[in-house]
Amino acid sequence: MAYSRVRGGDLEIQVLLGQTPSSVEDSISLGELLHEISNKNDTSMVAFTAAKGVFLIHSVSVPEQSANTIEDARQTIAEFIRSRERSRNVLFSLQSEYDSGEPEKSPGTNRLVIIDRWDHRSRGNFAFSTNETEILDVHLPESRKSLLKSLLGKRRHFTFAGVLALALLAVLFMFSPRTAMEKAWMRYDTRGSKGPKYQLQFTHHNVSEWAENNPHSNGEWALRIDDQAMIPAHLLDDEERRYQKWYQERYPEMNEVRTKQLYIDEGFLGDPMAIQVKSDKTFHMSHCVRALRRYWQAKETGKHVCPRDIDYRHIKHCLDSLDGWAFPEGKRLENQGGMEQEEDNWVLIWETKVCYD
Image (cartoon, rainbow, N blue to C red; front, side, top):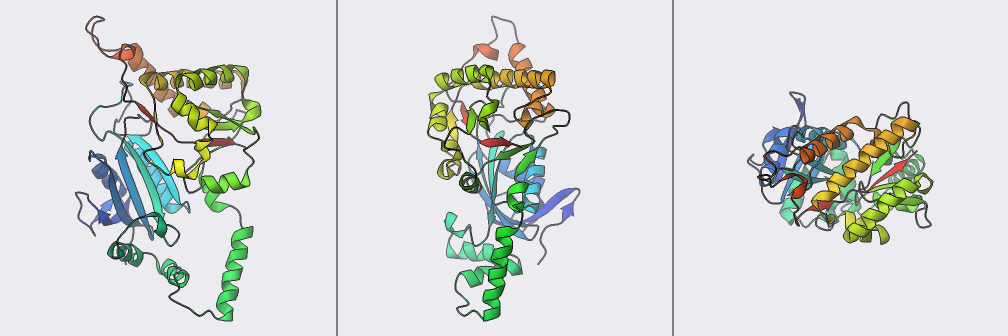
């Protein structure tokens, strides 16, 4: 069976389930699939094969703007497909440039995509019919199908050699490097700056593993609400503490995520509705001011707190956003946009990440 190929620099996939303009069993590129699901006004789910695996994409339209473009999302998902990760969240905007600093108002422009890997471990997480499950299972690579059959009890008898082989695999897994976890760490260019080099974005699949292996209940970490970043507690200075107090008081719903430690809760991170936390227009602007201050402080001192604090693309996005807020179109009396306008339907898509060296 043919799986994915690279077509014009893009990954070719085969649609298995889901409502898209492309027919089931069609071969399309990953970029084309993202464009198709982004044009839908509501939530959507698509199952497809790629790189000798089966994957599920859940997509929902959200008001939260992102610095990521659809091309960034395509590259991130392609990287995920080639990795050994279980799940990843991707937030992106269809705007090609952030010259206005304002989220588009048309449906589907800003999308949250959750991609999961389908195999024997994920079967219980989704409510597929028997027929749909068989469609997904038959497209698993032969090695995974064999493992699936054995784990489901279709082979009831194990030879001594089979038991020994499974034991050896278990030992290798226990003592091998944490490849899957390591590949989930996002690394930014931190050359010339002292501070944490790695930044891991949590999903409902990897957060429990991290929590089990890293102390976090006795004040080891501090949470920055504006970028949902867990930082080593000793790196929280007085200035950051003052601004975080402002966030805690202004945004009680976000502060509840902090105080209840929902930011490392598997159930919370796995619920597409729960991670949409009440916000307002001021939140994004305030975050960008903090981002610029962190960037300036890091460049002046040669020390950063999170790798993304010195990421030039993030800073450019914030400058473009602030530019749009500071220089709205129209005359003063005619203008209804810019910083003067406030809306009550803003939400923050919560994405916890931890900064670590």
